[in-house]
Amino acid sequence: MEMEKAYLVLRNGDVFEGTRIGAARDTVGELVFTTGVVGYLETLTDPSYAGQIVVQTFPLIGNYGVIEEDFEGVSALNGYVVGECCPHPSNFRSQYDLDAYLKAKNIPGIAGVDTREITRIIREQGVMNAAICSAPPASMAEINAYAVRGVVPQVSCKTPAVYPAVGAARFHVVLVDYGAKRNIIRSLCARGGRVTVVPQDTSAEAILALAPDGVMLSNGPGDPEENTFCIAQIAKLIGSVPLFGICLGHQLTALAMGGKTVKMKYGHRGANQPVTAVGDHQTYITSQNHGYAVLAESVAGVARETYRNANDGSCEGLYYPGKRCFTVQFHPEACAGPCDTSFLFDKFFAMMGGDEDAEG
Image (cartoon, rainbow, N blue to C red; front, top):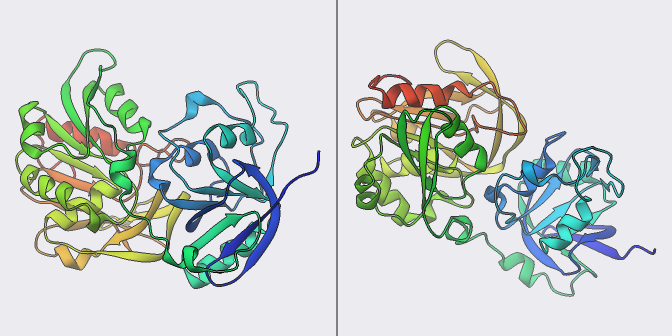
């Protein structure tokens, strides 16, 4: 069967010719890269990629097929770029192939392009808008005008849901869903948490009315500063109940405490980000997916920096003394990814149990 041509057109004018995979439609998005060798299913189903076209740096994608049990959430990315899309996966758990998945989710993709060169461009020039299309456009207006906006309401759940603890229930945790990955819920339930997941537009008063022992703020997509309602609710929650934030939850908490965030040149996306604990110099390998970072100096006197990225020195964790609150930029629940920092869930449970300095 003859493969349909497709083009990846970057905002800087670069054009890459390849073959179409997935949905037979054109798309525009913010072009980013992720460095995971495995875990493409977790990438495809990570809501934090909402509005983006994702480039996989690993050259062969789809070799172990599609396994629905491994999905982390809703597929919200705008497009998918791979060097080679494996048409015949080999894995006893595989249910169908990657191309079939992309078609079923209406995600356009392109294969047969030089993902190494595309990644180099992003690293040197920064993330930029791009399009996957059947022919290079006559005008760049649509590509230039695109922006990732309003994505947290898009990926958050619409109604609350309750998940029982594994074994005896120790604590009741309310998880605010800004685009939560399922393994956050699994990690809480496995430790004896009864988890109530609530939508992103749930008020602080409604959350506290559920009588939680602790509140978890999830990961999610987009510019954190855009979520003014969420920030205002977190400001009301801090100090009232033990609080643990991951990724977007980390950023929103800093903003709620008067801090600032900044858009990074190309962000951190992959399962190999080294993070160093401030003070003891212990370094952990972490999974990350974010394009914004908290400026640690903006919360000086309010929070203490607990972790830094070993590559670029950006803020990776904060502890708020006297507030029973700590947050991290990386994913301690990562799946598939390193499990170096899963102990942070244990510290959250210790904090709910009365140890106010569990992450101090």
